[in-house]
Image 1: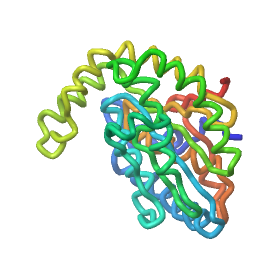
Image 2: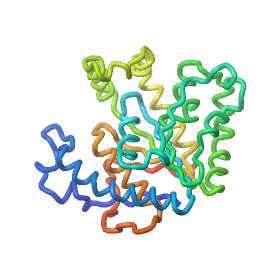
Image 3: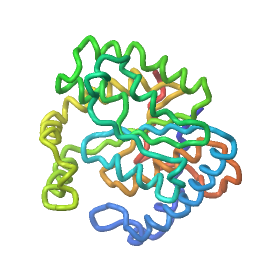
Image 4: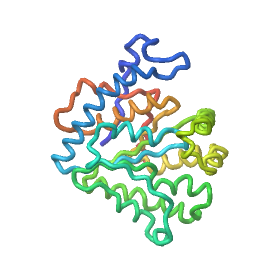
Length: 270
């Protein structure tokens, strides 16, 4: 069973504050890289264990637009063998997929033995964005909730190591990141008209997010919610949480003091 062990003596709280945090409160890049590299070595160990033991790891990364879903997945997979670790970011369903069981196209992407799969958005589209913008009917939205917990219980019961992350940011942070994308020619491709509509619907997203946590944050598949207003702190704690909840070979227990209670909230009451 997954759990969040909170710790007050994390490196970011035992090192001199000015070495860790900038004037705006965000984490310094140099400190972040030092801490992240310790975790990267552990992620490589984890992958070796998954391959050698024919285990399957599925990681769902959800969150608000601009929260850093893609960059979080990139941090997880930075040094992993890409032959055995891949990211799935499905486009909108085609005409054939629209007529299928809702979970069917996602199930085609589940990990095989020895694989790690990251979902950049997932079947939880139906819990949020699809419902807000009318891409599904209210009946389909409710039908999703009648099925999803049993679906996830089957995945876990079949031996899949299953983790669900949700990145939360404030409305102001989201607005700032949209502006940054507008100005950066290397990030313009990330912007769509739907991003602006999603920003306008921020309050609805929060309501549906909390509904999702309440209905699908189960003991066997909890939600690890991360405050992602500082992407670096969110990434560190996402990796800490995942690694601390898997007993892989040659694990360096000295690294896993815990996670930051200011960043991580666990939803597991469903």
